[in-house]
Length: 156
Image (tube, rainbow, N blue to C red; front, side):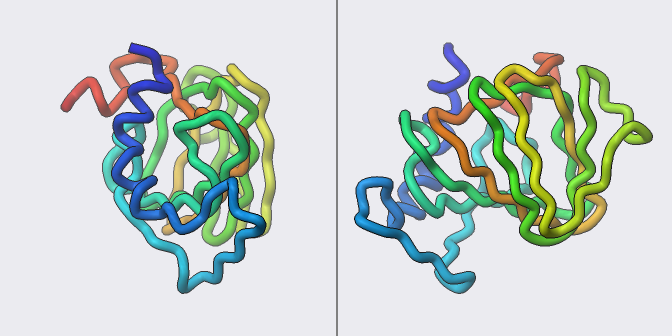
């Protein structure tokens, strides 16, 4: 099963909740009070929340997705099929590059930080405080773990 298909299945529920913002709209405006949080797709470790602000991450085209990640949360080394463009909205993201999660080799990116990674670049992240990040990129969005055993969908 393709990564995008797996993601699409896990995303259907939270995309429906956040369907107030569509890429076909003439314009989109979202205030902080308008953000509708729901459990993140099952491709991510349990505990994260997600909100689609614009577009549909399961389909081709531009989208904006916010993730709220609790303190102590980590995403093991993984890659994405498309460019990954991230803005740290609040908290701090600890970003590391490569196929091994070495926390001593990460860079702390506080609120206001930005990073962009090309398709297929292995990286990992962890969060030592509640953090909100925004992903703005082209779908369909997907995530492939370097070590397939890290995929939370394998344990379900």
